[in-house]
Image (cartoon, rainbow, N blue to C red; front, side, top):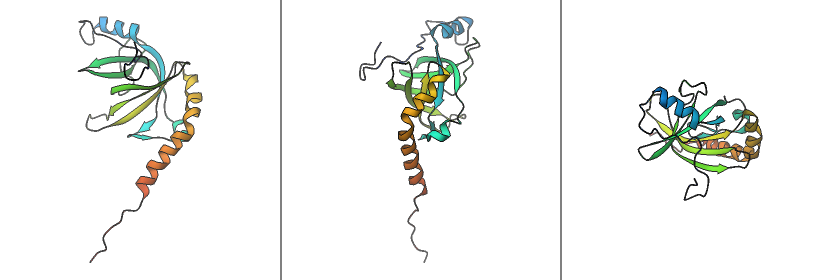
Length: 166
């Protein structure tokens, strides 16, 4: 199924509950069937794109990408492929696919919440069918990521004009 507005394919790993209870054996089995094997790398920290040299040090998560629909919004999570149903990452809500490549890699963008569900920020995930695909896909975006980080850092470091003390 394609997104009507973008022409991109639908988000992979789509799961429809079909009346089974949350956390039930039937639901966990459905997750395993629907889940899409993936290695994921977060490209942002608190909403800011990280530069290439920092992203090489960020932990990559391997599991099953699971897409669900909550209250009309798509949500994605990476879950344990072993069948426990445990989430391996904080999920993203209001997710859309930005890019999809022939090799199966894709960029997903949405909103991510902190651990306390107090603050949220934009997040982008780079997802590849296997761990080996992450570095080549990152290299293609390297200069763009570095420019985004430099611009965000410059905005933070600009001196603030202050009124002179009287």
